[in-house]
Image (cartoon, rainbow, N blue to C red):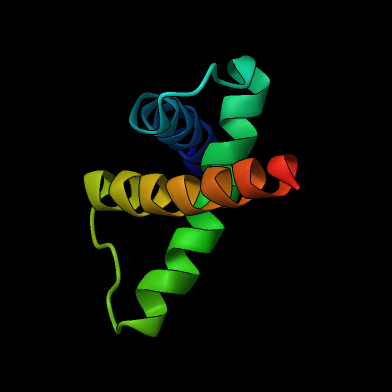
Length: 80
């Protein structure tokens, strides 16, 4: 059950990242991957500041933060 919640959170975070970054999006699977990887990046960045998400909404927000960072890096690499 936790895995399903994790996937749903990843999809939501990936979609929200696409909305924040005003890009064309990466499709359902791409948004899922951005959301999941964004969760890892966001968790790392939040940990650097001594922060941790303690709820489902907090996890999604941290994943969106990481997703925004990840998409910004991808966009920067595409320009080079």
